[in-house]
Length: 187
View 1: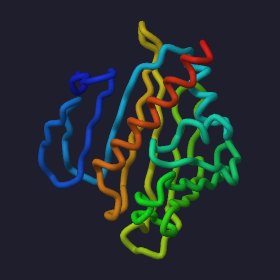
View 2: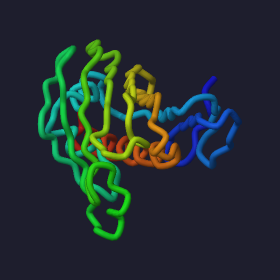
View 3: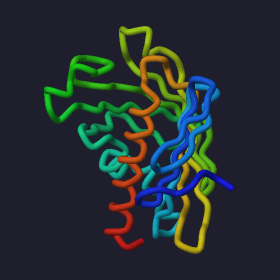
C-alpha cells in the first residue's frame, strides 16, 4: 500500500537524506535524491499518455506555477531528444535560475517509450553551476483505476542543487495542470 493520499488526491514520496519524513499530503522515505508524486486523472489512459508526448500540451502543463514553458525541440520517439526552457514569470523569483538569472534550460532524451504504460527520460540541466550537473531520470507511469488513470512521476538522481521539496512541489503543480487540461477537454 502506498503513502496516504492528501489534499487534492496527490501522493508524494521524497528521498535524499536517509531518514523518514512525514508530509501533510503523504509520507516520504529518504534514501537517495528522488521524489515520486502520483495522482488520478479522470481521463482515458490514451489521452494522458498522448498529453505527455505532445509538445504543445507539454508546454502547457509540465511547468511550475511561477514559470512559463517553451518547448524548443521535441522528438517523441525512443532515443529522440527534447529541449525546454522554463522562465520565471516574476523577476523577483528569478534569482534561482539554473541556466541564467531567470531561466532553467534542460535537454532530455527519451530512453523508453512504452505506449500507454510508461515514459522514461534522461534529463540534464544546462548550467555553469556544478550543483546542477548530472543526469536525472524521470519515469512516468500510467495505470487504470476505477476513477480514471493513475499517473506517477518518479524523479531519480536529482542533482544536489535541486531541493527535493522544490522538485516535489513543481511536480505536484505540473500534475494539477495536466489534470485540469485533460478534464477540461473531457477525454
